[in-house]
Image (cartoon, rainbow, N blue to C red):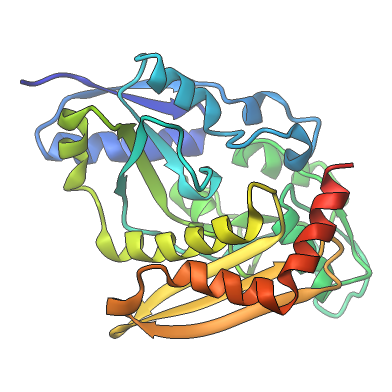
Amino acid sequence: MSKVIRIGTRDSELALWQAKTVQQLLKDQGFDSELVPVKSTGDLILDKPLYELGITGVFTKTLDVAMLKGEVDIAVHSMKDVPTILPKGIVEAAVLERAVTHDILVTKDFDESQKKGTIATGSLRRKAQWLNKYPDYEVVDLRGNVNTRLQKLENSNWQGAVFAAAGLKRINLTPDKVVELDWMVPAPAQGAMLVVAMENDSFCREALASLNHEPSQLCVHVERDFLRTLEGGCTAPIGALASIEGNEVVFEGALFSLDGKQKLEIKERCPINKAEGIGVEYAKSLLENGGVTLMKEIKEVLNK
């Protein structure tokens, strides 16, 4: 049996680039497909910070519904936007080879020695880490797709705005003036692309299986296990990065208070053949060493 695979995607330039990348990879394997763009809630509501929307999977929910209704067969996501628990009936079908993971500051006049200023981000994680390092800065909310955010920065008097390096690089929009934030722990699964399919769709799942990159899959699973165990369904300033060095998985994870004043971190290494479940173990260790109290404080503030 052969069919045209309907690829669900957000309609931003970056999302379409990701979907077209999957489309080309499927074509290389001999599969026909078509793109089905949709607008997500996260793209439509731009006047509120993400955490105020109160929706799990604000960028993925619309595509989930389209899949469950049979309007698309698969969906392509930036994996960092995907909830750690997928809706019933939808499964991970492929994690593509990961791109760069770090954040960058797109800047107009940022000076490392300048103690005060204003930078923009819509991410609690980025905000908390920036304030941890630069406590006298003001951090303002910034929403919209990559192009919209770059334009808002251009029209502002901010010193800069924080972006994922991978997103800008993929669509050739990296400006000349950027600062690599190598001290900032990225979002779990940052730089990774996830393709999901219906659990009962063996045709699409088999078609996508050859696109899966196992080293990337292993690392993002460790990070997302860490995230899921820590947050318990609550948006929080959490960073995590796993990488493979030789026969080991090297891991760094961090949890911050919303104002950036508190930082809990863990750095560990373990053999690849013992990596199953280590993200959960690392999160439990952090929870036992102050994380429970900090997560409680974060939830109290966000749930007001």
